[in-house]
Every structure is written in structure tokens, then in C-alpha cells.
Length: 316
Image (cartoon, rainbow, N blue to C red):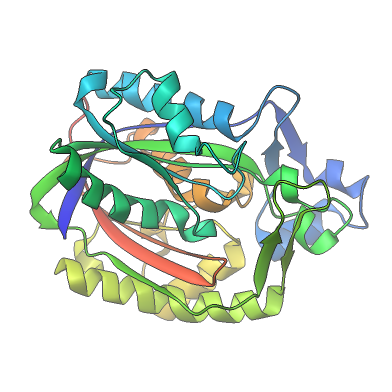
């Protein structure tokens, strides 16, 4: 499958910063307990007037402005989310309308939970074949606070809201290395997301076992399909689910920790938004250099997994 270059990025977080100390006033927990088990120090929750769409728009506008492209050059919009404002219209269609992109721009959402953004990139590759254009706007956006049970200590400490967006350019010179799979497990469930009683339920031990097994396998298969070794990629971005999971996988891969970017300490687990938010931070921090490659691997509800390799283009 034809690869992509990252040519711009953007991200957005809501206004309410929730620290571990804030959570200790709601459930029986404390900062040390949360940090030692998850690596998380704070996360963000939407306030009144903020939701998945406002976050998606904030990230998308920044990415589009930073790209230097005209609206007519965008060939598709794909949003990864499980917490959209509506079941339909999709968040992607609402973004397309608010950005005033042409009406013939294919736009759709992907529901693959935390694997969503990586899966959405592969979907965008196919949609560009339909549009005949070479630039895709791919967004990961979540308002997980909307479907989090704040009385459940095992989940409320993990999840945060946010959005990340990338403008990707088709790159015939590289392979996307796309690898995806699923096993139909209910270890992670978010039911009835449009109802007040909805909440995320998770079997933490089962998810840990699954993640630490599938992430290294997914990374290795993705790299093989891209024709690369781990030594030949410059960066690896895993879904920011839990620092203990990431660290366990790094040890299992016997790889240098500095190759694996982490930002979970100040974002929490933002599901499908975590990978593009991390890449956006790297972009803004000047860590991504033209010609570098970034392997992205995510796992999530379904249970699902997905991996891709992106190259880094030049800033406009």
C-alpha cells in the first residue's frame, strides 16, 4: 500500500485540566498510586461548550493552516472517534462542512477505539484513490469524559479528552506497511455512548496481557511489510494507553527507550486521539526531521490492533 508523508500537524485539548489530586477528591486514590500504575499525572476534560467536534475542529484548523494547502487540495477527511456528538452525521462530515471543503470530499468516521487513528490512515489511502487527490486530513478526536464512570477508580484515572490531526501526502516512494487485525473480545466495552448511563468498562488484567503480546508482534509485522527493521525507523509511537504497557513492550523488543515517544504523563489515555496528539507534539518540538520515518502501533477495543509507517515531509 502506498505510503504517506506527514506535512503538517495540529492538536487541541479542552480547558479543564484534571490532576491526580483532583481525582483523589472523587475516588479513593492519590497521585503516587496513579503515577506508579499508569504514568499519568494529569489529563483534560471538556467543559461546557466543548466536545469531540470542537476539539476535532481545533486540531484540524491548525493542521490545515500549518500545511499551506488550499481547501480544494484536501482529498478526504477521516475521523477516528467513539465519542462523536452524533451517531450521524459523522464527525468527519461535520468537519468537512465547517472547514468548507468541497462537497465531493469523501468524509467518514472510523470506530476502532484506540486503534482508530492508525486504522483511519489506511482508510484515507483508499479514499484518495477515489478523490484523485494526494492530500488527506486524518483526525483522532475523543471526549472520553462523556462516557467515563467517574466513580470507577480503575477507569476514571486513565481517560482524557483531546484531538490530533495530520495532513498526509501520498508518497509513492515508500510503503505504508499497514497491518491490522481483531479478535472480537469484550475486554473493553463502551456501550450506548449516546445515552446518559453509558460508560467504559475494561478488564485491566486481560487488556494488559493482550497489549504486551500484540504490540511487539504488530510492530514487527508492520516493519516487515514496510521493508524496514526497527533500527531503520527513527521513531516509534505507540498508543498512549499506559506507561507500564509501553515500557514492558520496549523491554520485550530490547530496543532503546529514546526511540519511543511518550506523552501520556500530561494527556492521559485519549484513545484514538493519542497517536496524532503525540506526533503533533513531536512536530512542534522539532523532533521530526524531513526524511525520517515514524512507526505507529495502536491497540484498542474490539479487540483490535493496527500498525503503519509514516515518513516525514518538509514543513511549508
